[in-house]
Image (cartoon, rainbow over all chains, first blue to last red):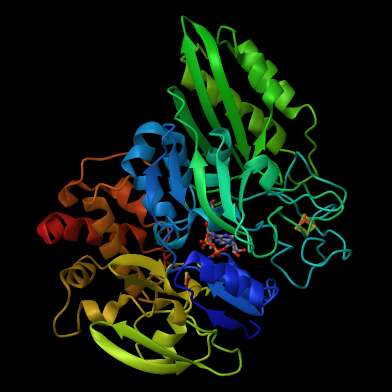
Length: 329
Length: 180
Ligand SMILES: Cc1cc2nc3c(=O)[nH]c(=O)nc-3n(C[C@H](O)[C@H](O)[C@H](O)COP(=O)(O)OP(=O)(O)OC[C@H]3O[C@@H](n4cnc5c(N)ncnc54)[C@H](O)[C@@H]3O)c2cc1C
Ligand code: SF4
Ligand code: FES
Ligand code: FES
C-alpha cells in the first residue's frame, strides 16, 4: 500500500471540501473493497477522505411512498430493516445472498454499488489488464474466464459487475442521489451511473471527481411477487455466477407487470426492457418464459470458459419466473 | 478536523477490551495489525489479510467485522472487543468452554475468529436479523445447524473442523447463551 494523507470530516460540506482541496482524493466508507485493492497496489489513492462520521445512516420513507437509504447504511442494517423486508424483499434477499456476516456489517450502500470487478487478472498485478492499466491488454479474453460477463462486453474487457445488491436496486428502479463539490446535487439511475467498458474499461462509472453519493432512493414498492435467485460455486460466501432479480404481478391469470435484472453476466447489473414487455399481458407458461430468455440472451456471447453461463442464465430465469407466477413447470 | 499527512504518523486512540491505548501509527496500519503488532493482542489471527477467511474477526461496538479490512485510524470512536476481552485461560467464556467440550478445533488458528464471530452472529440472531435462509422468530435457543452454517460462512477452517464448530455454537446457544 502506498502512503496516503487521511482525514475524517464531520459533515458532508467538510467532506466535499476535503475532496476538492486535494485532487485525486478518494472517499472511503466501509473500506472492504477499497482497502483490499490498496493492499495489492491496484488502487493507489494519495488522499483518503473517511466519510464514516457523516450523518448518512438513516433509512426514511419519502413523501411519495418510497424509501431513502443513506449512503452509509450498512448492508446488514439494510437487509434487516423492517420496511425493506416487508416492501422490497428482493433487496433484502439479494444483500443476504452476498459476502459474509462480517463484511455486511461493514459494507455500505454506496460502497457496494461502486465495488470493482472480481476479475482474477484485475486482482493480479502480474497479468495484463486494461481495466487496471489502459492499453495493457486483457488476460481474460482467450484466457481463464469462468466468472466473466456474457453481455455488454467489449474487445477490451469482459469483466462482470460483482454486486448482488445492485441487481436488486436495478430491478427496483433505484436512483442514486449525490452532492458535487460545488454544492449542486445530482440524481442518477443505475443505468446512467455505470458505464459499459467499450474502449475505456478503466472507467467504471460516471460520477465526477469528488462527487459524493448521499443516498439511494427507491420508488414506491411494487406490490408484487419479488425474488432474488443466485447461482454460485458454493452454498454461501461466493460471488454469483449468474443471478436473477424478478418482480412480477399476475392478475386473473395474466402477467400485468414484470421487471427483471441479472447479475454476474454484464459489466453492470443488466436489464432488458424488451424481454419484460414480452411478458406483459400474457398467461404464464414455460413457452413464454423460454421466449423471454431468448430475448435476454439474443446478444449473449460466451468466451470459452464461461459459455455455460448462457444456458445457466436461461434456466435460472425460467425457473424463477415459473416459481413466481405459479405456472406449471 | 485536519489532514493527517502521509509522512507524519497519526496519533490514534483505541479502546480495546475496556482499556484506552494512545498510539502513534502510520495511517496505513489496519485494525488487525494495530492489535497484533502494536498492542501485542495476538489472539486475533491473520489468515488471508483480504476479508476472505474470518480469522481476524473482532467485535466493534458489539458487531463482528474483519479487522484486516479496516484502518485503525477509522476506529477511534469505537469500543473494540477481541478474544482476550471475552475470556482468559483461567476464566473461559462459556462459548470458549463449549469449543473445548465439543472439540471445536484442531490447529486452533481459526478459533478466535470463530468465537468472536459466533458471539456477534448470535447477537444478530437475537435481534431477529434474517439470513439467506429466510426470516425467523428470534429466540437464541431456537437456532439450528443450518442457520449456524449459513451465518458463520465468513469463517473458514483450514482443518475443516466444521461439524464440531457448529456443535459447540449450538450447544452454547441452547445452554448458556439463551439469556445473555
Ligand atoms: C471476501 C469477499 C466476498 C464478497 N462477496 C460478495 C458477494 O458475494 N456479493 C457482493 O455483492 N459483494 C461481495 N463482496 C463485496 C462487498 O459487498 C463490497 O466490498 C462492499 O459492499 C463495499 O462497500 P464498502 O462500504 O466497504 O466500500 P469501500 O471499500 O469503502 O468503497 C468502495 C468504492 O466506493 C467508493 N465510495 C464509497 N462510498 C462512497 C460515497 N458515499 N460516494 C462516492 N463514492 C463512494 C469508494 O471511493 C470506493 O471506490 C465481497 C467482498 C469480499 C472481501
Ligand atoms: S476482463 Fe477486464 S478486468 Fe479482466 S483482465 Fe480483461 S480488462 Fe482486466
Ligand atoms: S485475515 Fe481478515 S478475513 Fe482473513
Ligand atoms: S482449527 Fe485449524 S483452521 Fe480451524
